Structure formats: structure tokens, C-alpha cells
Length: 126
Image (tube, rainbow, N blue to C red; front, side):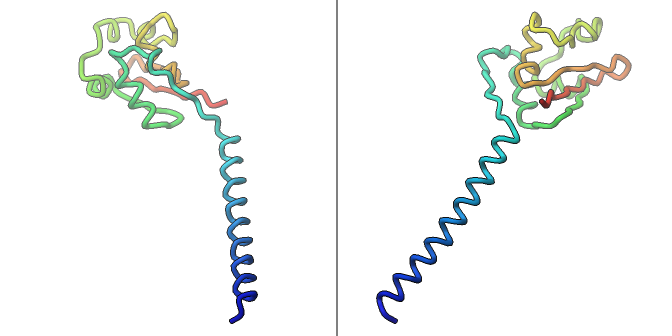
């Protein structure tokens, strides 16, 4: 085989590879555009409740339902008495509660079922 023939074949292979790379880059760019990536600032999250934030971040689902027992297991300690006595206000989605930052900073809202002690975290998907 002549050198000119080898060079032409190599150039053709390079062209094919460049087209594949271009297609992959376009696919990547369309995915990035379709799904906005939120940067989580863990400095804004209560260190005491950070384990819950980490759990929700890893789960990365639209909804995550957890019992009080499961939440306590994730946190490594019992929830305060107010979580059981004043369920609606404890799980209120307000930034005045430092522990609420563990779900609010990730884009979740908490909703408690007062009868079953199950908290459902619902991700805001814009």
C-alpha cells in the first residue's frame, strides 16, 4: 500500500472520529441545557442536620418519603420533642428554622403526614 493511500485512510478515520466527538459534545450540551445543575452551598445547611441533606442529595428523586425513625437513623440522633408535638410547624418550609435548610437548600419542600409520622420531601422542578 502506498503512503498516500495510508494517509488518505488515516484522514478519513480522523474525520469519522471528529464527527463522533461533535455528536457527543452536542448531546452533552443538550443535556446540560435540559437539566439545570444546582450548586449546593453546604455552609448554608445546619451542620447538625447535614446528614439529612446529604441523604436527599444522594437520593436525587422528585419525592422522598421517610418515617421519623428513618430520619433519626440518618441523622444519628432522635428528633426533638417538638417534631412530634408540633408536627406542622416543625416541618414548616421556613428559613427561620435552621434545620429546614437541610432540605430547602436542595430545592425540596417538606410535607408531614401527621397521622403516620411520615415526611415527604418534594423537589421543586422548574
